[in-house]
Image 1 (cartoon, rainbow, N blue to C red):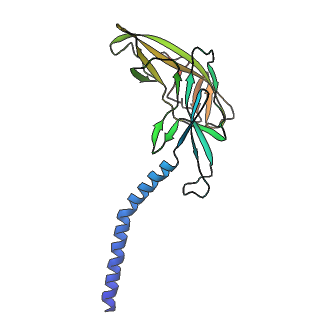
Image 2 (cartoon, rainbow, N blue to C red):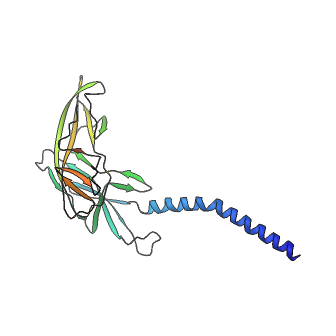
Image 3 (cartoon, rainbow, N blue to C red):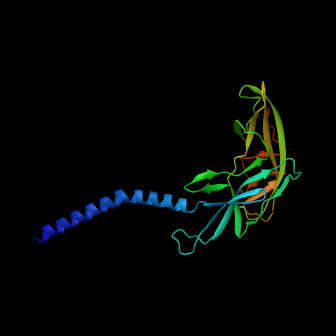
Length: 220
């Protein structure tokens, strides 16, 4: 009787172990998904030409990392008629420290940083930085460059950027492409990025992609 009971107990333990091995990977996967979602931005704020995403970690929550409040700058609205072409990225949005350019919102939707040109007509297409095109949609294009200077502070630690060139139909066989080109000045106290000759590099010396830089040409 004792031998049979021991065998049944061993079989039960083996069965429980098998179930655990089957369920654990899925549990870890869903835990990671929930954690990633919990760390994404949830709210948005606008101050002048700047649009931000914000989030707040509350002490005692399951995923608290001690960061408290933080913000990401996601959009700068550039008005060519304003005469203002230099922007200093704020160190804070209210009492939210600005630590990223671009980020992820809600359940993980990407929200890259970009500079928008105010007053453009509705665009029919966008082309990522680094592209060179002689024609767009089979039409000849006139290219307009909008040059801006960005002053990057010491607190920015991550950048998710995807600056695009906007294509506008003008009728006939022609169109317009509007390109925002950036010249960077980075605070020497920033430990994650540095600027050199108007271009931005990470701490490993790699060029930060996702921008048209001040001397880039859209057309080859």
